[in-house]
Length: 123
Length: 132
Image 1 (cartoon, rainbow over the protein chains, first blue to last red):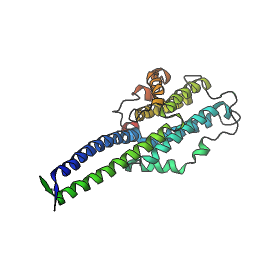
Image 2: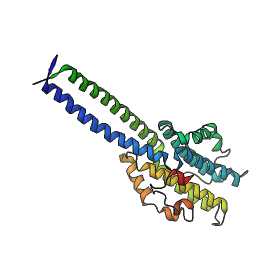
Image 3: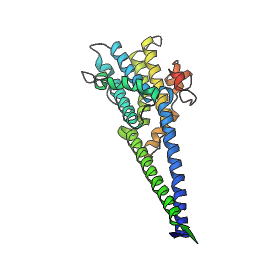
Image 4: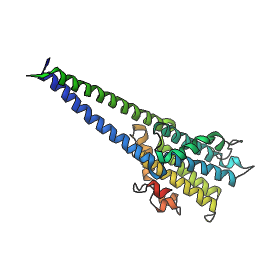
């Protein structure tokens, strides 16, 4: 029916430490979530990235895809990073529509370039 | 000298739940860190945004070019968004010099004339409402 007070105090101390650590960790995660949802959120940033690719494709329609292959390559890397982060940070209600648009697009096609970039190699 | 077993068990249960929540949040943070650091990390991507901006200026040299301006504006937005997020992510030893390079960069010059550089790229007060 009873437990030594000392034993209970050890548990209470551990609980106190655990709560402190949890509070700190939750603050870190909250800051990340807030930053990831700022300015339209991670999905808006993905759409911005894809808009750059679309605009490049329109500006360099045919015959010169190689001149901006480097750009497509780098944009694809950013898109990929943002998608990995988005998968871990579920969209808030207001971002669900943007998330759907992103999910419906074919990212590979957005950044696809037929010919390799000859003059514009990696730095 | 003694407390009731019921009280002790209640504390132990709270401790078990707290430890589980701590493990879960630690796990999530680790996954975010792994996702961020994959492929040289977020700071490398920001530097590449700036390299892209330079390349866009070279490919479309005229400052008056509407397409060039629009592309630079998108890149400025992405740079600022990534930078704002990067500040909240845990840094590792490898990302330190890249982070310094990012913070030392002159974004006002790189993205000169764009909307996102004039409103302040890393201003936390820039809400998503303002962005839309």
